[in-house]
Amino acid sequence: MMKRDPVWPWPRILAHRGGGTLAPENTVAGLRCGMAAGFRAIEFDVMLARDGVPVVLHDPGLGRTVRGSGSVFEHDARDLAAMDAGSWFGPAFAGEPVPLFDAFARLCMAHGIWMNIEIKPAPGYEAETGRTVAQVTAALFADELASGNLAAAPLLSSFSDVALAAAQAAAPTLPRACLISALGADWQARAQALGARAIHTNHLHLSREQARAVKDAGYGLFCYTVNDAGRARELLAWGVDAFCTDRIDLITPDFA
Image (tube, rainbow, N blue to C red; front, side, top):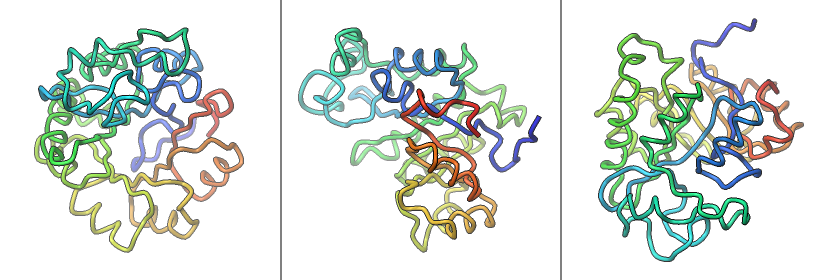
């Protein structure tokens, strides 16, 4: 059995937003689809509803994956949970609800699903979102964090440094990752300031030299969203630790 890298002790291939291209994103149906394909690790997004309750959603506006108009942040969580987040994908998923984060995370835990949780704050609510998501997650994984079992703990990531700083203050032992679309000269300074364990980046903007620099600096390196098997093999050869994919029908959990 391959020994796990202590810098990246987590799974290497993640189902993007649960079910990739095979089910509506960020839903229980998507999670179950990923599980049916053999995945035991997923990436998904969390933001706050108007009442401060975290929900599993990617878009700040309604209309693409959730029927309706306006902003997510104009609705309480229980109202969002009653909305249709599945019909956009296909009639078989009509009525699929927006998940509440706490319930969704507990379902993942019950099935041994490792989680990369992306914090998606509304403008002006970065600190509140980072703090709330970290607090809920830390409470769910209190035993793992107390024992130092970080391999079992989720990884929080965000494009928002403010959200990550708030998460760090609220739950300092929870692992964190900086989401950076294209690595600039300041990537390491940002990671150090936030106590991040990993860098998450768009594989389209990553070079072999950058991958080597991240790994040489002692960080885990994760890429999104890799849907071509040839590119996936190239990235792994560069030293990339893990990636998420939409093509869970082509790139299997044991691909690495």
